[in-house]
Image (cartoon, rainbow, N blue to C red; front, top):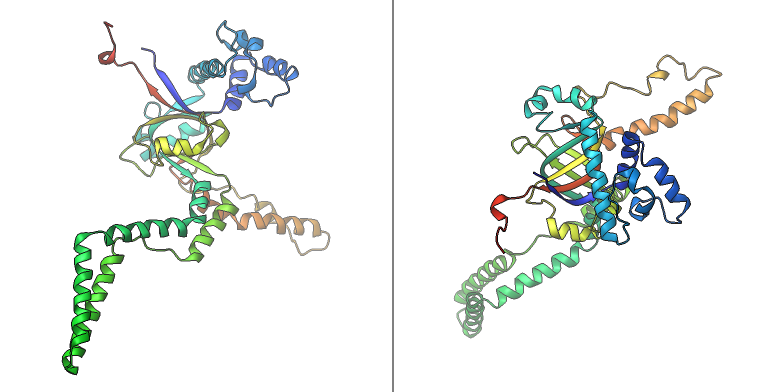
Length: 357
């Protein structure tokens, strides 16, 4: 039963690289295409007339953008099939079970695989979007709170309280007895305070400016243009998920704001992701120490000045390792991948088939 893939994201540069190595059929085509075209080496611009037979495409000359994308998708399908056929890809939920993850056996499987395929609920984390919201936070909050106040002031019950407040003020103004007047003023003050609390109760609280500025600086320095996608294959195991950093240019919808609007930052539908494994954190931490080579060197000894300078500069990078770990948040048992494709996979539903039209 054939399935249809509704692609959200497709990295054709990575597809082309892997496909050419597995089939040996796309490398010459890419070279031929690049010599006859001034466009960048993005497969979305390639002429399928040149390499359609090598790539296993259709016999039609693809001219329209829609036809070209269909050809790209067919090449991806062939690539995914070949990756499984040749033993380069493990599928979470099939080759890697929750028990494998819990026992630590999954790490061995990940280390022997080039790619991972996984399906599950997904979370989108666009840090560029965070900075834009932070830049306009005060205006957004001000608009929300003014809207809340406007609705409250139009509420008949609130208007009744305001009228009651005006009556109390007028009664106090007419009073002659000083003691009674003082007592009523105290009651008026308490009533105004309660009214103020009521007015503020539905409003969004403000955030101190240093927090907003710090958040923007943190993203600009450590997470510029980072767009994380996290896929959770096991609903009862939130600690394990597959992390990735997507490139905006490979979304099929060029406007990532449209992606956010259509799917939300926490989509309610499950998606499938195929990616090349880039990081496999170990349970006991990283045992590799690139600075160990300097342990047996006397850096203060004459003649070792070059090594001392090298040690100092390289040590600066190691000093920031802790910050890098805080930012990447890829820790055991999670893994990191470079995504090749993200899509929703749908098989035909017999109950929905129209037999008579």
